[in-house]
Image 1 (cartoon, rainbow, N blue to C red):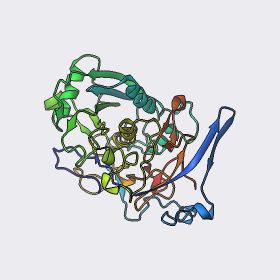
Image 2: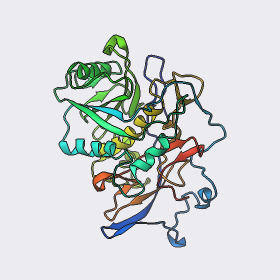
Image 3: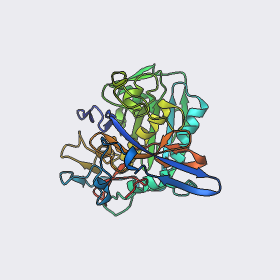
Image 4: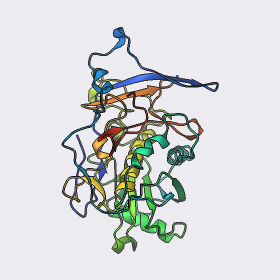
Length: 356
């Protein structure tokens, strides 16, 4: 399964998580008195023959790499002004702990964040390699500039790709949110009891820009839903697995923050923020000739989280002392599992937890 594309008015750049069937985890231990240590399982008696040989990625970057990928710049803007302002719209009912977890991830992006390596900030550095026609890079600085809670479900519990823009319009007109069309991102997060058109069936998240006829302005935005109760095996994989995999498939990996739905959301949020920053108006960085169906810097690396990833493998990621899986560290000791991003320098998918 892969990305699903839409017509000019159906909102491109939708993330649909592919089902991956093998994972490879290596242990990570740390203490307050010593730096983090990562150990790769390399003993012959515990190597899984179904996993890709270590030599596949020891000599070159191959994760997602291909001579057939022609990612090009189409002369549009990127979000280069610092900071990139994130305006959060909490639609539905959210626990404070869930909000804090998501905000900790976003606040971990800026380079001033104190976090162990490999860090979320190091991961975003790949995104910052993308430039506009003036040579200005995507900003490395991210700021949560405002929040708006719509716990009354003002547009119902069943949203469509058009009514999501009405949710944004309500937030902008409510006064807390300014109209920030230069370096703002409007991020709509829906709770687990809210359905969205094509959610679980074809998308886990998407981004586009608002229509002036609906919102009054052209504003880049992204939507991501909490799949915890609706389809965790699709949009929160590998923290949940399809029932049909039962005894035949691998057990689900433990989410780093013990919340399958929100931990799954965080990788989708990272995917959409990376694409919005490098292609906010769908006329900057993407592969393919059709701007209504672009393949962007996150799309090229769906399902890749570590070295050796590809062909159904998520790659080698880390596990803490409690068996929880992650590949990035964030502020306040947080841990996250976030997909890699296409690097314009390596011409391959990249992440700071790479082992080569």
